[in-house]
Image (cartoon, rainbow, N blue to C red; front, side):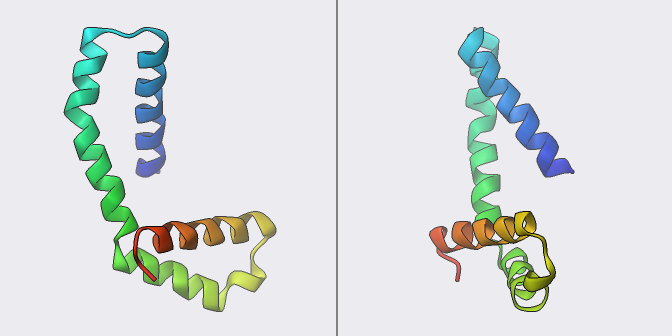
Length: 85
């Protein structure tokens, strides 16, 4: 839930910059962009999260609906691209 909210808020910030650029929004983006980038990189390198997805892939994948399987497949691709797996 918190990650979803972060995505929403950061997406909103990007949208506001695109439609109503202001000094204040640019300053916020400059301040928080490095932190948000670091956070997302750390998720992509998180061994515990990777192992959890791997367990699901090996034990529950076939019981999931097509949409959930796609989520798992996409997450594996992202882990692979970030160097895990």
